[in-house]
Image (cartoon, rainbow, N blue to C red; front, side, top):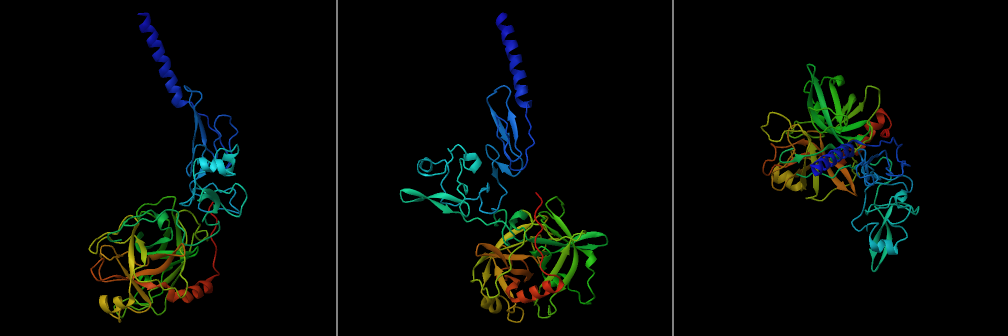
Length: 434
């Protein structure tokens, strides 16, 4: 009987301890990128210290969004470094980078994860690029024969740069796959208000904080009446057509400048390009974020080789006969097609002009379709994503031997520049609020 009573009391104490184990927390409001002075946790970047009551020697940090690591010391959203990168705590690395806690690094390196001030220097059980000794830029240790050496990392310095995404591309729009907007942060959705309801019209590409490049045929009217700009809206950072969230930025249309020589009389869309100037109700242009970034314009004389892999993205139909547009942003890859083949084998030299570039999937399974018009065809060049084409026209969607036809952006760089500068000098991104 005494044994039974003893077990009952012990069990009760254990349950009470477990309850406290899950409920006793210590919260600390920490300023951005300042460490806690709490003797048990040392959480950084606003991390929350949790001490387990039952096991008094166990503590851990619960990190806010965007941070990870034992002490919340890793900034998973940091895409670039400032000044010389001594304060860089992002997760960029190179394939050859050695972990800072590797035995050979600890033995031979001047900087490693076992130093007393390793946490302060950003060193730990990882191989991310750091600058603990005040060099020009972040670096890491790499092997060189039987020794190790300091090797600079290929990380962008902060400041506005075009064609950089914050999420890896999503391969595998007709036959494509769903994509998060971070993988195509320059994509714009153009909506038209019809009888009080906003309807998706076309895609576009953000080429400057105040300017979106799209297709002229999106606004073409046989009557040639002046455009009513007030019926249009432009959304940036939009992953899902019928859902609004805090990633998005919405703009009114200040101006629509279609190419004066646009024509569809030949059966194709020649000079199919238009500029849209955007602003918020308070008069601001786009704010750079993980979800909203500009795409690079190509160099004037750039001519990419046939079969170069490029990407298309948009909210268009997934099949030619679909009634509805795709609700989510879609992305797919296409290969550039020889101009000769496009003109003489797939189409003809009347419909396809030198103002156009053709691209298609070699298996004819992926393609742009209705609703993708005006959207981007981007190709990687010199480490950045570049707007090489604008979705323009085609014969059906993913039809065999009928590639998509795109406006060749390199032919219109002077037109783009002169029209943007005629309205207002180019703006710069407003910094993302911290």
